[in-house]
Length: 277
Image 1: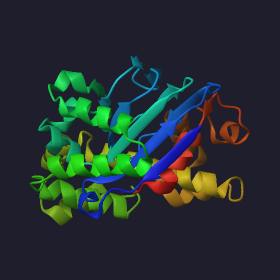
Image 2: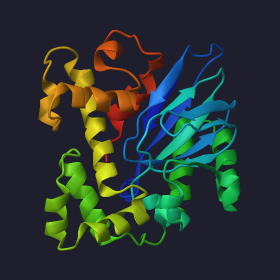
Image 3: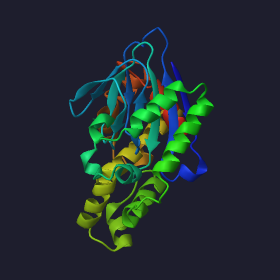
C-alpha cells in the first residue's frame, strides 16, 4: 500500500488541510482499514477500482466507484481496499465545504455523496486531469489550479463558528462549552445552530472528534508506558475511556495493542501524522 500526503499552495491552506494519494498493488489488503473522524470533510476522486465503505455506527454501507464527497463525521468508517485502488483525496477544513458547495453542512454530515448528484461537471474534469497527469507534482499543480479557481473570491465563513473551531482545536477538544458561549456572549442554542449549519456537527460533537483524534495519537505514542494517560484527556475513569475508545475503534485499547482487532489502522496513522487542523 502506498500513501502520500501533499501540501496545498499557501494561498489555499485556510481552506484545505492537505491532498493525499492512496494506491494498492495487485495484492489486496487483508481485513479492513478503520478511519476515525478527524475534523475534516473530504473530496475523494476514485481513479481505480471500486472499494467498499461502511459506517461503523450508522449501519450504512456503499460500494464506491467514482468521485464522492464525505461530510463531517462523528463516527468511524471501515474500508476494504481492493487490488489496484487509486485515490486522490482533499481534506477540507471545517467551514470550507459548506461554502464551496453552497449547501448547509447538515446535508453532508455522516453522509457520502456522489458528485454526479451535485450537477457540477468540474469534478469529472478534475478527475480526468489527475488521471492523465504524468507525475504527482503535476497532479498537485492541477489541484492547486482547480481550488484557486473555486476559491477566487474569499469564502463567506461565519465568524462565530470560526472562533469556536479555533477555541476547540487549540484545546485539543478539551473545551468547555459554557466558557465558549460566555466568551462569545451568546446562548448555546444559537451557537449550536450556527456551528451545525456551517460545519455539520454540533460544537460538542466536533470537540469529541478532536479530542479522540488527539487521544489516539497519544495512545499510539504512549503504547503501554503510562496506563493512566487517559486521565490527562478528561476521562473521569478507565471505563469511560474504554467506552469511548470502543466507539471509535471498535475494540478495547488492550485488544488493539495486542492486534486482536479485525481492523488495520495503517492509513489512519499515516494521515494523522501529516494533517492537522
